[in-house]
Image 1: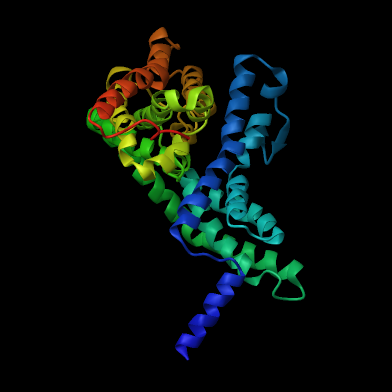
Image 2: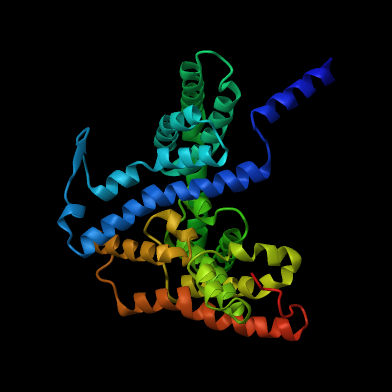
Length: 367
């Protein structure tokens, strides 16, 4: 009897496309969440920065006042980060339309109740609400009522129960990482740079991880260094095989394109990883590079230059608030060295020795 029930359940879940797996939730959903963040919080931050720096009235003026809070174009986009993340997750999980649209409410609730650690709360709550909605979708004649009701009810209930705890846990962990980086900038610079850089190249989202943990400050700078080392590093060492198309697609796109080659020969990863371990502590100990823009930027590297824009946004905010007196030439030198020059110089030197040792051969980095 038990076996019969289990078989029925498996068939039901298969019919509903509910696949409980690390790939579905840890790769597909997490990666989509980062895209949702990019299309809301990050774009909103960029719009605000552009408006302030170029004195564009339309972008700096209030376009809406809601509950006594003034919003610019950019801040309206940023305010939608919760719904954007949840809908992106629902899209990745192939939810039916009614479930997908209901996730707008779920995302808003979980992000708001999760506080500064809202992205992690959105990830957990949106996944469960999506799967719950998929299970009841088209199972009744009043689907237009049942599916949104179940999706939103499950989402808001979980938001009330879990979001505050998840948000606090994420921020606590992020705070510990940032505290440890400030206390031990050399060792933590190596560790954070390597781990976040590796996450960037793996089929998971370093941006979403940084956002969920609220990784800013020196730790954010180390994370940025690691990501740049991977992206620029792979772009340079694979140039002989992939030419300009590979340089651009990896250098300002993503080093994740090399995952197939890494699976075939993991040793192609040696040079970018060692470079991450070198540039991380240089960022934290020498240049004191801090990411005080949106935390999601810490895990973006040179992708669309979002990481660099994030650092610049942080400088502008710090100058405005009086924390920083001015943006100096040393600041710019540090950002350019960590983001582009050091990865472009160090990675090929290390890779040369890797090739001489016979660990990597021609064609191993071909996209």
